[in-house]
Amino acid sequence: MNHSLKIFNSLTGEKEVFVPLHENNVGMYVCGPTVYSNVHLGNVRTFMSFDFVYRALKFLGYKVRYVRNITDAGHLTDDGDVNNDRFVKQSRLEKLEPMEIVQKYTVDFHKVLEIFNLLPPTIEPTATGHILEQIELTQKLLSEGFAYESNGSVYFDVLEYNRRGLNYGELSRRNIEELFANTRDLDGQGEKRNPQDFALWKKASPAHIMRWASPWGDGFPGWHLECTVMSTKYLGNQFDIHGGGLDLKFPHHECEIAQGKAGHGENPVRYWMHANMLTMNGQRMSKSTGNYILPMQLISGDNTFFEKPFTPSVIRFCFMQAHYRSVLDISNEAMVAAEKGFSRLMEAIKMLNEQLPNSTTSTPFTKLLIDWKQKCYDALLDDFNSPILIAHLFEAVKWVSQVKNAEESITSEELQELKTLMNAFVFEVLGLEGEQSISGRSQQLEGVLELLISMRMEARANKDWKLSDKIRDELLALGIQLKDGKEGTSYTIN
Ligand code: AMP
Ligand code: ZN
Image 1 (tube, rainbow, N blue to C red):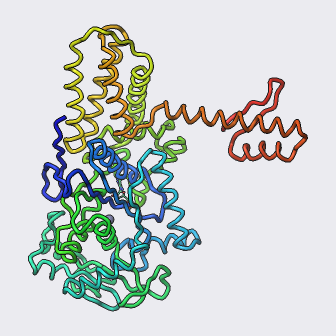
Image 2 (cartoon, rainbow, N blue to C red; image 1 turned 135 degrees about the horizontal axis):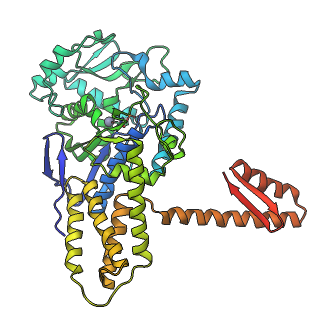
Image 3 (cartoon, helix red, strand yellow; image 1 turned 90 degrees about the horizontal axis):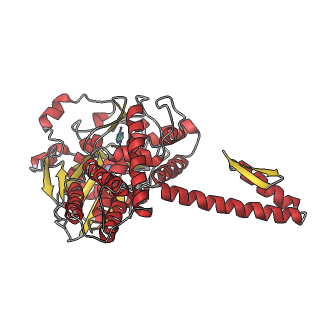
């Protein structure tokens, strides 16, 4: 197989041949969620885009160290106002400790990603678990003249960085003079020498609960700093891939580059990857505008945007039909179309895996199959092009029906090869979950219920009413109702 992976690098604006720093190994960092509220479907799209990248890299034979952080401190809605700490605000609203907010929404985040079959990263560090490292890097930036202390806070000095020829704005292609001209002096920014300077460490007001001791007094770290510290701690001062949503390019990723170059003397990232946004009915999905849907609302059908519920695999299939760098708009029509496409794909896989006839004579099919395999690989190698890959998979769906209708014939070796590849691309690389695994799971559930019903029968035969009632009541609490009849006990699941 011809392997030459190309990645669109946001830093250069070009598709480049991917050469990892250490042969066959990839270090990848993706900015994780700020865990102060439920993830919406837009957030899921970005994490799914990088799940696909991770799966594709592994499929292509790379050993990947995949670090995705949890932002559990320090993400202010605006750098200048410490009263805008998202965790503190939310904890007041919900009358919970900030760390209860963190726990609640970290659990939600993991649950949601599991529902969509996203693989966990290999390391998932938290900002609060790396306060010491953040203080250390701040000290280093101070001692090297890239930062200054002001009223208990420490800021990165963007002008000084540029004075040393380091080029703030290289990722977002922004010109620093323009930036200065366009910035209003926001409330509380009087502490900064320049409005573009950003906080490395923020002083905590007496009422601010999330606080840590530092050489500059009690405070908390800046949001940009945590990603620099956690990425370089686990992947080295320079590493292969850094990903995140397009909206994080500026200022977050621009600041990460500045901190890395100033703090470690190296451009931290070789390939910057930015995933594009999810829109709904043409408008960007976002909590603040109200144009958002929670994943469970789409799965359960409990929402006002869509006419019916959709399964997680249909949603994943819909997302995978768009390239990660394109905007994706979800609407009722798009979801219904995705549902049709997904079920055609699943039917073909089922047929392929279970009942396709094969012939012993050799056919011109072999050459077709070799070309097809190369085309599928090429789609992956061309900047992880999932829609093109899916288009090729549908070519195979057509073959399957031709073979089934005896319009084409296929040898058993060819059939085996097609089966292996289709299953790998659909389940391993695209991360879709077939009816196979869903029906496998329901078979298991059926088995467990039969077992509980027979245990209850035994308990009743022994006049152990306490146990038999316990089984009935606890199943009921889980939404499973047992019904005793002449034929035995049956159940309904709500
Ligand atoms: P946050 O928790 O706000 O830091 O966001 C987590 C991730 O979701 C970031 O990488 C954002 O870029 C991404 N994100 C936010 N809104 C959308 C959207 N509408 N579509 C795709 N990704 C998004
Ligand atoms: Zn980040």
